Length: 121
Image (cartoon, rainbow, N blue to C red; front, side):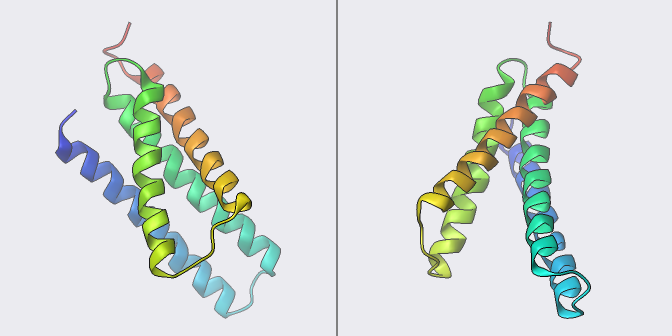
């Protein structure tokens, strides 16, 4: 898989997160939902972004979709960790578990994506 396809998929995943963050910000600003619903929406947006990236990487790959899903998840996780370091957020056990869940979702997306690939046997 070429680097251009990796960058395109990662770019779309980051765009999904940014558009979702904008959407959640508007909902939060107008107090449409309470904090619990907003937290769930944030998690759903992150899950969908990580799943999309893993699925796209897996769909393009010829074998071992779970490896492609892990690659996608690691790239997005590194981006999120860098973002959190810039914002000086604290890391703890809860944060590590959160990133592991997102990495698992991306891996799952890669495994499903490879099964949707028409070139694999």
